[in-house]
Image 1 (cartoon, one colour):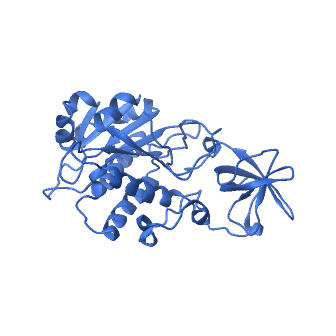
Image 2: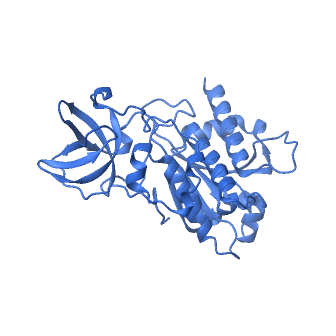
Image 3: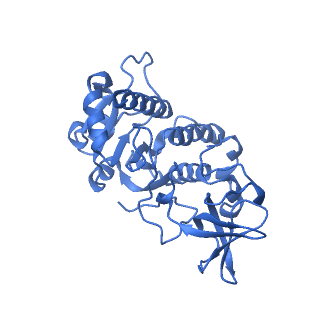
Length: 317
């Protein structure tokens, strides 16, 4: 499926198209890689009219994704009758801004109305968002996100969030590229080497994918090993725990989809001429004792990932 991977800022072209990191949500060993993807509808913030409230809602989604080590957030179109480009841009920009380490944001993002309330976005505090801001605090072998500043003698200078740029030896890279580096030498100057994100042994953030795809297109075009749709009309999670744990254990790419504030996935799939039960492996009710008439998408995301994490961790213990 075509789409932007971290949209803006750009990623170094030599990095692999599918960026993966270690997912501990299922208590996997550090030799097993899993890619947990969640799909949210474009209209996720449609029930909040003001940009400040929209920003807050999207911030909850990004925070939940980081807590449960989501590798990819897919934003899908859920209303073919509307032009949803503006909403796509808003969600993508805010989620990408959140995922970008604070020390790189000024270099990678321009001031624009979309980010007027970015200050209320919660910090991720993930391993790739370090608080260390001085060379003295750096450690050999440490991984950092960086932005290239241009060529230098013997390599490329890159901002790694400390007082002086590091030099990436033997690499001539264009400026303003976001890359992942490893700290190799700390003296008067800092030397680093270019790495792929999958080399790190810690959760290294999520990427955002958004394009013209509908829910059905996402499911059809991507080759997920396990696909789960969340719905109040689904099978209660209690009845599927063991089955889901086995499938989760065997899967490398896992897809969990969520409906919109106004319409659930059954209705969204129906308008595309699909039967939800035929489009995914499982339709699951993650909140069997739901007492409210509706559950907002950001609430469903937090609840569902927490339930999955607890089930899988408990049964695999």
